[in-house]
View 1: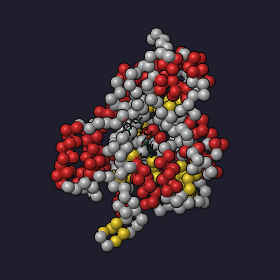
View 2: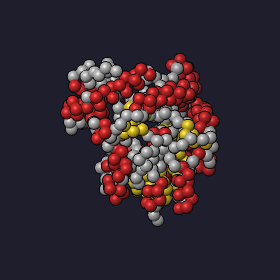
View 3: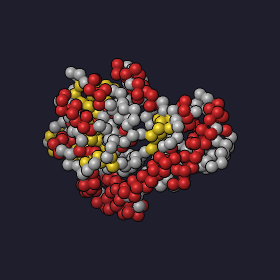
View 4: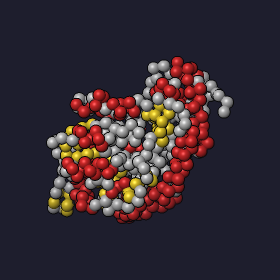
Length: 399
Ligand code: T4K
């Protein structure tokens, strides 16, 4: 490939319009209008309507779980999971996640305790968690980061040994399996996100799933203000319900999920082919035997061997109209609201701190043309060819 002048150095940008990090599945419009029209005819728009029940049944079958309780967001689902388990004091979690994970602990009046992560899988490191468990620990909240299953065996052993609750933040892990087992069957309960940025979505939405239906009744009550019937409120719930219109969108999205996953798989394969042997770039390592959902594609950029920092690459790609994202930087522990916690000190989190300075998510979604994947790979590798100029043009790169 002939070297071209990067846009940050005055060349023409690779794309004319921005290529975003992700794009949602768009349902068949006619089918959705029809479903919406039927919902309007029925004048039943929310509160456990027939479309929602149909979606929950479809998801239970699809995800191979004992129950699926839908929510208005992944955050509402996770808030409710922690509440339903009646936790006390401290919950151990990862700093390398979206703020919602940690906010849900705080909103339940609990204290988050950050532990470091594994440098290859990006998931919470069970060995560090074992060291951090104390008399005040009531639960573990690991995240299946970017759809990569955590070390579920190790966490199950810690749960048993210390008699803890185990909640998985599975926001990224819709449809993921380890061998023949659904990701949603590990731990006490798992929270999924159905936000538009996820592989499966209802625009906004989420769910709690589990391999065991014991918590189902409590979760359903808490999702609807704790209301048992007209005369009784049994607990302090919230309004976490998903509307009929969102459920109808979910039923349509579900029809396209296999096609979407297959297409993402091909695009990831192409990225891997282009980047796996490049010095200074590293890929995430997945749990063995994982059936993936290809939620996203991330690289670690090592400044000294790649010749440019992650921030410089991020900025120079933006000039090419390629919108990469720094998921998850800054670490949750670096945000002002959590910095006061003793476990938030960077010395306690060396692996996560290092990763947060290197991580970059590239555009990935089913409708991204394969030749666009090649153009993105070319653009990124071309930055290395022009590293000296790009480095001075992006010196002190801003986000
Ligand atoms: N736990 C974890 C580990 C999570 O990652 C999340 C959410 C949660 C819990 C909470 O789940 P929810 O309560 O959200 O269900 C996005 C999402 O808003 C968030 O759901 C997600 N994780 C997080 C990783 O990403 P932003 O602020 O990066 O989104 P935004 O608006 O910048 O969108 C990213 C790109 O997606 C845009 O550049 C373009 C594209 N996009 C976005 C939307 C909303 C579209 O093409 N269409 C759209 O409608 O947080």
